[in-house]
Length: 129
Figure 1 (cartoon, one colour):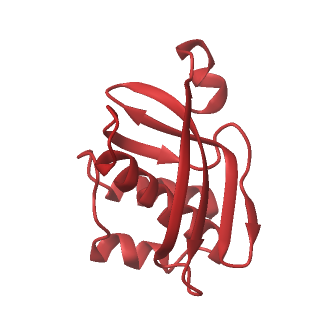
Figure 2 (cartoon, rainbow, N blue to C red):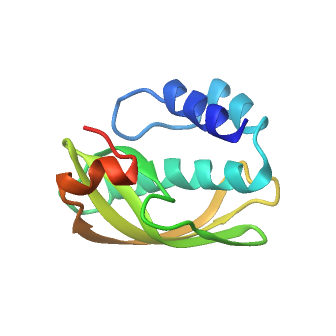
């Protein structure tokens, strides 16, 4: 169920760079377990934050669990193995994301952009063009 719900959420997000949460996304989130829900809202926050901050990136996808699984502690998730796609290239990032108790919104988010992920590693990491 988890994988199909995550795929469904990814399909509901438009391909436009940063998107705000819409009613369809919120309804889909409510069907997920709390940890997956928090990761999904943090994925969206990563795209929004990286897009609006002063850097050359404009993400259209972000995943908090590409290189390694994030660590959950209550309403906070941290990770060193996230990735985002900008202009057809994937980049690594680390992050800390604190959500509301229902895991529907992000209260705080910090991140650090890492190195580009070589295209030769994309398939093994589940990344795509």
